[in-house]
Image 1 (cartoon, rainbow, N blue to C red):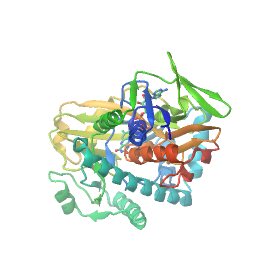
Image 2 (image 1 turned 60 degrees about the horizontal axis):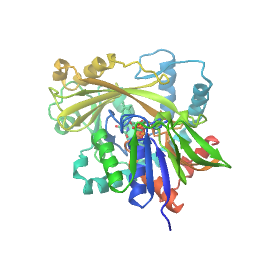
Image 3 (image 1 turned 90 degrees about the vertical axis):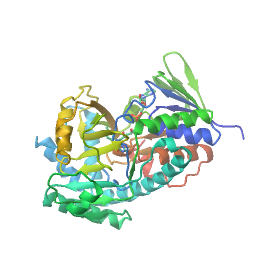
Image 4 (image 1 turned 180 degrees about the horizontal axis):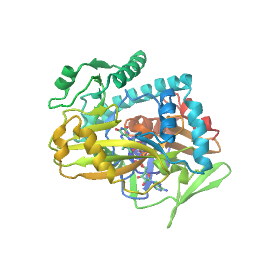
Length: 411
Ligand SMILES: Cc1cc2nc3c(=O)[nH]c(=O)nc-3n(C[C@H](O)[C@H](O)[C@H](O)COP(=O)(O)OP(=O)(O)OC[C@H]3O[C@@H](n4cnc5c(N)ncnc54)[C@H](O)[C@@H]3O)c2cc1C
């Protein structure tokens, strides 16, 4: 059989994973990246690979938190109310997806995807030790009894779906995180989670894809699709029309610029990376009340937080540097005296039900979407790449794509 010609739009973790699995299976792959490879949301995030984080963002509790934020209460979540029909439609779908039954289906699905992706990460890391995959678990810490109780309830629900979770008291938390200070009521340890430097991941995937024959082009922006009789025939860029048999749209939060009907909101989040931190936790942790994550990345420390639905808001958000540092100093007080680090922000591609969109668009059957990974795009990159490759090359996928198809949004 002649090899399939595939054109991928988007050089983040998801597009590069698809390029890698497709090229390794013999497809002729070209990937177009508008900017520099891996400088979208995949660049400065927390780098967690967390099958345990499978509670979809649309869940009954999130509905309450979202409403509080709309009412102006202090919250790491922020929505800027604006007369935007797409945001309104997205919010209505989000509210519908917060029903307990839908949230529970979403949880089981994200768990399955996460566990399978972890297996693929282990496989990738076995051949690429430079990937720097660390499997040391993830500790959630709570300062108040109230937050701890809510955390324990969530953990109990996750345990029922097969996720390993160990409640820990403050002494056990200190054993897991030597140097931890501050006053904590307790925590929950998710021992099976892992972490890595996400930029190192994208660079490794890019190299692996190219080693397998893929052409990776940066600085080439897809401007629009050329279509004919229910199929995409080319991607038009400023200088060229790129033809192929199959097309993959993996442009993260920007995917809706090419398919405007996609229900995606850019959910802005921030990170602060300290090159020489005065304290460095041994493993990743989450400060439950603040929803702030701290990840050791080599000798550096990255602290992340915030989820804001502000549209593509270009403000650098430098105030987040101080905010993230102050949150981190509650666990490691030495951080209060840290030298200023680098503040970064990225746009998570967020769907209203919190599940990614993977599969063909019904009206353009040779266009495969691989987007909408929200908070989990690093975690789910390998499994997404694998599913896209299986779908394109054999029409059969190892996991059922039905609940992930764009058809669930009428697309
Ligand atoms: C603060 C923060 C912390 C996070 N922490 C984690 C975490 O710990 N674990 C986890 O799993 N996930 C995490 N995420 C989410 C994760 O970063 C994203 O889900 C993931 O990076 C999305 O990958 P992507 O490849 O879909 O998109 P991106 O990485 O954004 O890549 C899309 C690419 O497409 C390119 N592009 C856009 N338009 C075009 C066009 N027209 N033509 C060509 N190219 C185009 C862009 O330039 C970009 O490089 C976090 C996100 C944030 C913001």
